[in-house]
Image (cartoon, rainbow, N blue to C red; front, side):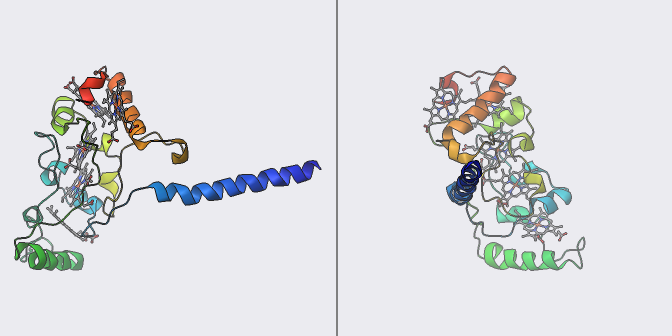
Length: 190
Ligand code: HEC
Ligand code: HEC
Ligand code: HEC
Ligand code: HEC
Ligand code: HEC
């Protein structure tokens, strides 16, 4: 009899885990980016975060790069990278689709808090002196475009978290408490 109970328990456990595996990814929001951008290669090429996200140290939003930014390196005459196929292909594409047509690259914004929360990059990057990758964990090592948020939100199974918002808030407040910054509701909800 005890063995049957064990087996039933095991089966129920396995079913529960299988269910989680279906539900958890379905709850994640993912977006498609227009180009196969690779952070790792560009950070290795010596470019700083701020070169491509130019407003992060003096405005609320960090900003995404315009096609003109890319042409700094992806030029048709490329003495620095003569035999790089990936480089040549992407350069031709950028020229044809964006520069020649005067069109911007339609990047999709992934990290976006609701309107009723105030967050300023300038405040955290300039005054707070916090590294980008403290908040955007691992983006410098990514070989594929960013399709979902990279905030280090406490990692218990999503199914137990009723609301993503509450967890984002926990993350903000945890650091504010640690750094002795305000946790007054009105500082963030204004
Ligand atoms: C600092 C110079 C530099 C800038 C600025 C730059 N790139 Fe690149 N990019 C490179 C180099 C170098 C490679 C090739 C790396 C390799 O293949 O090893 C590359 C490769 C790529 C690739 C191919 C990726 C792959 O995995 O092979 C894409 C796509 C790309 N760049 C997009 C962009 C876009 C879009 C911008 C502007 C937002 C940009 N790059 C700005 C230097 C740069
Ligand atoms: C050569 C340009 C370039 C450099 C250097 C670069 N980025 Fe990016 N970044 C991009 C582009 C293009 C995108 C949009 C495509 C994507 O999602 O990968 C992006 C997307 C992001 C996003 C997601 C934005 C969103 O939509 O919410 C974050 C966060 C980010 N970058 C942080 C960083 C950090 C931190 C660094 C420095 C370690 C860095 N980036 C360096 C070009 C760059
Ligand atoms: C204290 C944590 C924190 C730090 C430090 C930080 N970010 Fe962010 N980042 C966020 C949050 C939160 C959002 C969503 C903001 C919103 O919705 O207004 C965001 C959004 C972004 C975005 C997408 C939308 C936009 O244009 O703002 C990019 C790109 C980005 N950050 C890049 C950077 C770069 C580059 C740095 C370093 C120079 C940096 N971040 C430093 C927390 C941070
Ligand atoms: C350090 C910043 C910060 C402080 C302080 C803060 N919050 Fe938040 N709060 C947030 C963020 C970030 C979110 C999530 C917004 C999102 O996901 O776009 C949030 C979300 C919420 C939500 C929405 C949750 C849901 O169910 O959607 C409520 C309600 C809320 N906060 C109430 C409060 C109250 C009450 C206080 C004071 C005791 C407080 N907050 C203090 C940053 C903060
Ligand atoms: C890694 C630590 C860290 C995280 C995470 C963080 N903050 Fe902060 N925050 C700081 C520090 C440090 C300051 C004080 C900067 C200064 O002015 O010197 C600050 C200041 C602020 C202020 C200004 C407070 C005032 O005195 O008026 C607001 C608003 C704010 N943060 C909102 C947020 C929100 C919203 C989030 C989450 C989305 C967040 N912060 C996440 C460290 C953090």
